[in-house]
Length: 365
Image (cartoon, rainbow, N blue to C red):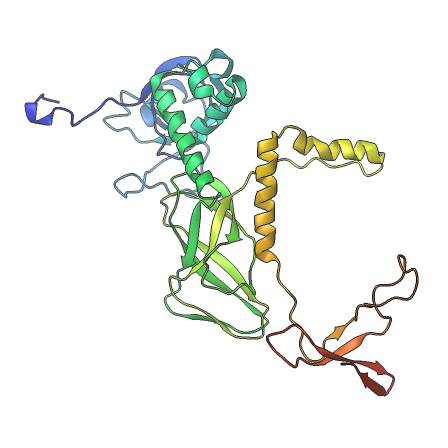
């Protein structure tokens, strides 16, 4: 590029590092805005044409910064070593790279490392160097900037109480949900946090346009920032009234989750052994992390807690409120099942039941 005084400061330096793929040294662009990693077609043919390209059968649509779809042949898996990281954590095995067509840039910098590799590298560095790894680990500037960017995303997500995006109705018109029925509607993501691809769970959200007695079915959703993705939301109306969801109404939110291997517990072992197996999950947590997890679970539980709605004809048990003498081990409920006759005041959860003895009915106030 020709130097012109009017263009001073227009273009900065590229965030590039030296890497070794299968022992071959080359250059790679570090891109926290990319969710995938790529290798140029010419570099693949020159050094790795003995590896078969594994097809994706067009299951993955990759959008470039200009909105165009990125063509690719498939992917290969390579062992990677990155310069600029501590020696104890600068290697990764079986890194996935998409084989993409050549361009002016990747003809000289054949690799691009995205968050599918950067995030595991950062976690390895954190594990080896501690929580303050940005200060304690000997990181080269491109990797320091990349890891710092990823950490800022995590802090923003924590500030938003793990809400990675909200979901609003994508339906073109109002949707009606009849009492005691369920329906599936389309939703779109809004107020997204720039974050690497992650598996998320649909959760109720504060300030939603639907009432509390409309249940939202928890659903796993893959999150890809900026992809304009639509999600399906299953709503169940457990109330006795009709609920209407307007277009663009706030319905729920997405929260990222971690999926881990589940170890089968030996039910034939002693209770002490089983307690040890259960405690494995919490022993590695710090008091702060444990307290944070407990508060998050309470917040989600409280969103779902609500009273039951009784209707005429429902069978119920009546609690015994008065006892004679000692009653620690006594039944807390009357033996007879009652049938709800009516609810004198719809705003108060007080009902008039009756008990049926054969053909006779006895009402209680």
